Image (cartoon, rainbow, N blue to C red; front, side):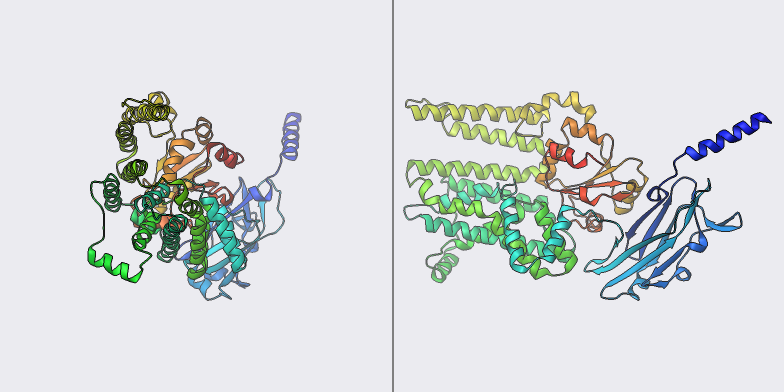
Length: 568
């Protein structure tokens, strides 16, 4: 008897010391939306239940318990309870009938207890369903919303005055001008200026050429952004296929050989005479405009946070004109370095003669490098490194790597060409060894040793598989939206995800890669579901919920990546 009393006392004492679950752990609610319903998922902590008579759902302050499927109940101690996790499905048709100013409120009230006798105070949860251009979205109005950078920019765009938004997005364009997105355009514009150079080329002419190029580039960004949002997927993704990339690679090869003097590219005489009559002092500007327009779409398919934010604003607000103007202004900001190159062309570019022939040949090789860069999106990193290496060998030999050098300048030129030759040979060797980074071409020697440490990405094919993988994972989840034509995606693979610290950190995550290269319908569905336009995008989830503030758009360095995910 005494032993039983002692055991009972110990159990009672331990129960007093055991810490009860807090409300957030006892009742976890998650909202989502599809084409037919708003879904509210209830997930209980261990040994938690709620009383059925306290459970009430209101839509626009009207009870709707009788209008929707309610969870199963059971009797416990003469009370009707809801004992297990469940989901509520509220039809969008019902929500449409209760919209006011494109908004409707879902209110949920309930009270629950734990099986050890501890009860929680009555709970109230409110969700706001709003009608947007792409359908509906639902947000938790009670929680402090942590939003992603691009969503913050979209909100900022909607709240600012028109003039202030113009200044803001011009500033964003200046920041994007420092990214790799703009770098490939520099040799293209420079080669145009060199090809049109001569005794009459000056600051005004150079600036006019670059201004037309930047104007076309800005127009392309605005048009692509509006078209992408209107169609619900990225226009640039549609352009990144083998046939289009191959066509432009051939164009760059043709331009390169014209730089070497094999022939002169000219419009048919009928068209050229027509253009000359219409614009005496602007001959050739139409071609510059076309090159600027296509370069923006084909050469730089990068989506950084400012650009994604503007596209997200267009998609959410439906204001295509306003958002398109912002993208145009952003494009002008991105083109500032190109305008500087054009304005200084008359001073820094050599006059016609031997020097000019050398510069034209240099830009001819740059155009060939551009064609390899475009085709590498189709044939992969091995083709890219080997192609760079082979062209580098030809370039080094062309510029005198193995010729006799008498003067000091020629010796310096020869030494530079020899160094370039050695680096090109390293690229060829590294490419065949499997290296993926042109900045460390011999890293392929270490690939076999580090292969076992490579991240193991799970692959999913559609939205249903993706959501299931996220909800079933017991670890935090990182989802990587990726495409073979996306330069920043490849940079993430080669630099960020190959970093030892990043790999060790992501061992604690479930990592999923979504390949949207082919722009299939299921690809567009996944992008649209998460309000994305194009890759690259890294999304993070915990307990089935996205941590929106951790969303990463564009390339991020390893150290900054580690700082971003350190508290997940």
